[in-house]
Length: 537
Image (cartoon, rainbow, N blue to C red):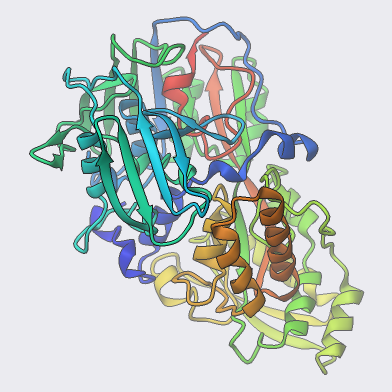
């Protein structure tokens, strides 16, 4: 993914790379959406069981990963896919870390507190932490690292993540203060974003070129789009982490080649497993499948200001005309969950569990058509696998299902190249996707709020927008939950997005490596911390 296409501050809808980079770049800090209690109540596993729960030091971890690019850089503002996410998450630390239960816990910050309105946040730094070059961590390093992503000329993928920040400054020798434009109850999660890696300052500027961090591993070699080599830092400050002596990341773009590298023992872990191969891999007693539920969700956005879908009854008819269970089995081979026409994933601490799950109901679909004053409907769905693998197949299945409700969907296959610049958000009915491990506020703000750059349905619901602004700075969780519950219901029953599926992230590992019984229920590869958290078996 090209560095020069990451200027999300310009709300550049003309690049699918920009959109994907931003969405992936929002994964980590927003893992607040995942909470242990909520996920267990939904019966969701947090990760595969390890065959050996006792960490062992030493060994080499070899990762075969999709998502590497020759344009990758050491600049954290440019990191845009799994290869750099995973590799540099082992080199650097952030102020906070997302634990496996989805909570924000201290990392380089020892503690934090906010004003009652959640507008001013003070982070007290951990003492005695050193960079790989021997330099002691100071408040100047943190301020310089954050400012690296700010400013009018910044092209950092984290600039929008820090959009609430009005000022960042040192307070004394051990604290850093963030002043926000308005309250944000989730700000302790925001600073866990891996783009916000803390780097040493040099003449008041963050030194990203050196690749020096405070993490468990030192950067020994980096050939963009090809390979990254890491070596354990002997003086890592965090106990019980960074077990491998070294790690090697190999960029393998082709899915079949990744599987072959794992099966033949060339690598120990791969990501983005082709779902068609999972059953075959499961037959191999030396391999384990790692599934992260609800890592992304798929949508069929309908433009609410188009003549086809401006009537909410027409939108409701469409939502009842799709068989989600069939799509789950056919498109995802069971690796996912059905959606309920809102973007908050099952397992989120703010999921509305009282909201009835929408099901396939052609009769109810016809009811809403008649309510809208029509007996039948003909629409065009412009579909592309640029949205996700299987998007066109899902569209064809939708066409067959909707026919039972008197809805004729003309599926038009669009080329992947230029889909998100020429079709998405411009045509009335398309295919789309989102990475789901976002805080409720972040997901609603970027994809559903009035005037949001990526409000892919052009939806404008005054009550929703009012609740969104009120909930953002609300520190009372029960009250905030009530607001988010109502917002999900509004999306479900008035919004323009059909959300049929939450797709799992599926990786695989050999029995040469192991991990704790529970892994992170967000993102992929143990919340991208695979190198720091796993060990040799």
